[in-house]
Length: 130
Length: 352
Image: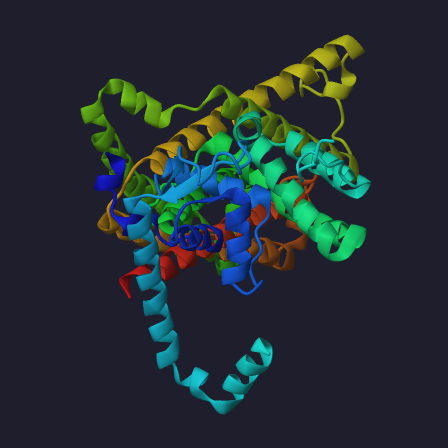
């Protein structure tokens, strides 16, 4: 009920952990450890979240109906039954898109600033990336 | 022969030790969080340890420890906070937090303002100095007017916000309105402990300043504690602590109750932006009062040092008291200015 009424913008801005969990679940349902691995992989190791942060975020995301615990398991014979799987809800999907749009807007503002166009800044940024 | 799967294979000691550490850390967290998430969190951490052990051996597992502690301890503290005061609501959380911070700071400021007024009472000897030195009169008038304006703005700015919160809850019944302001027993216990700490700090401050400035002579009529028999003294002291703690507790409960109502209500952007106006005025008036109070104290000592040092002026520990008052005013002003600027920034970002 609430998920249909809630405007995604009211849940923004998201914390990096919540946004990355939403992104990790965008490909399909995952269990906790798989979410942690996916976040490390999708951020090239720049963001690593531990189990406490993961389950605190999951708790809040369940409360906000961004995700739900899935009853189905990919292969119950092979899988550890203690594992819990989570998947995105419609609201979760809409919130992820809204956050992406918000970040895009912020990025557009940042790119329009002359300071960031100076060669020195670009070199510094590239150096930091390398 | 039974084949050992990864989950049944005996764990290396370093992993067992790491799991014990993590289990112990989790045991410090709130019971509800432990009940719902301890098992999966431990399960996932075991997998992290296994992966680290396969890659780098014991050193790899040990490398997980600093991150684990740094992540778990603040996370569990935040979880306690969430349990006590609930989660922030999504609508413009920054401005909402700013409103609550401003409210708390203004309450502290008003107490400091009242204490400042009490420190210069009776006003007659101070008026004598003010007649001779206009800057003393001017700064004192500035403090007085700023404090009155702050009180007025708090009432005029706070009432519409509270009215809206009650109006939103009213259609759901009177119970919802009570629930909006309700302080939970756990929160009340926390506030009582805070009130006791504040009282003890306050009494310690009074006793220290009294000791440093020399105690006033004890007579039968001035209610001097030191002149009483030990049992009566202990009883008096206990009653003093109890009375002040109760007073502080009531103030804290009222402030928390009003803050919870703001925290639990959904306000529109218009209302939250409106809240920035009284917050701005409060920041300005509080800053004016703080600067004026500091200048007043300095000018009093510079212009009339003999009077300032005398018992009628700021002698007998009053100077330390006035400094403490100005410090409290400055702290509340800094919080209000910080809350206002952060709220303003948040409203601008969202407007963009």
